[in-house]
Structure formats: structure tokens, C-alpha cells
Image 1 (cartoon, rainbow, N blue to C red):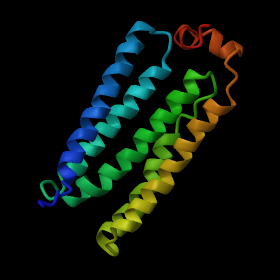
Image 2: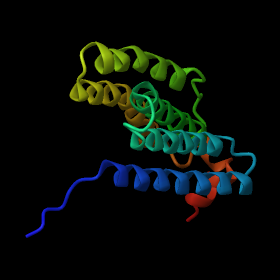
Image 3: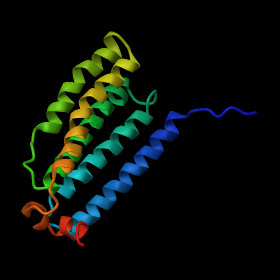
Length: 164
């Protein structure tokens, strides 16, 4: 029986295409609801993730600094933008520096675990640990949101989602 090989480039292409499709959808909805600025944050996050997965897929074709360090920091940045979009959509304050701080924190350990003491598991742990606050923060924002609060019912986009 033939063994199926795992191809990281195929995974990268599929991930990039998924992120681009989500970004297109978010930009489309943002054009339909121009007052909902948070949708642009979702689209920025998806575009950033698309660029990151594209760069990850170009490993051994472009310099390691770009395909490893920059690409992984962009993943963290994209998650931060999506976190901002979630908070903005729900009417919560949006921390402007959040994604940039996390991406900046990612760069030194990613560079160290690429050039100093090369370790793929350590890079995965760094990226996972720095994406976790954005992912949990977004989940918590949705969890604690009251769908009948004034911030949600005032938004035309959000109101249509919760219409009874």
C-alpha cells in the first residue's frame, strides 16, 4: 500500500487560500456595513495570517529569517488583529498596541530558536504561547457578551445576526 506523505507546502497553500477567502468575506461585509470598523480588523488579521502562511510555505526558497521568524511573528500579529476585531464588534475597548506588542515579543525568541539554539518545538511553543492571549481574550469577549446590551443592538451588523 502506498504511503501518503505530509506536504507542508500544500498545507500552506490551503491555509493561505482559506485566510484569503475569510479576508475577502470580511472586507465585503465591511463595505456593506461601513460603520462597523471592527470588520476591517478581522480582514487585516486574515490578510496577515495569509501572508504568514505563504511565507511559511516558502521555507528553503526564501531566507530563513523571513520564512521562520517574520512569518511566525505575522501569525501572532494576525491573531492580535482578529482579537481587536472581536472586541470592537462587541463594543468593548480595543487595545491599539496589543497585536504589535505580542508580535514584537515573538521576534527575539523566534530568532534565538532559529539561529542560537535551533528548535522547531520551541518555536511552536513560543508562537502558541503568544497567540493564546488573543485567542482566549476573543473567546472570553464573546462569552461574557450580553446579546441584548446597547452596544450590540446598536450595531446594524451585529443586530442582524441576533435578530429573532
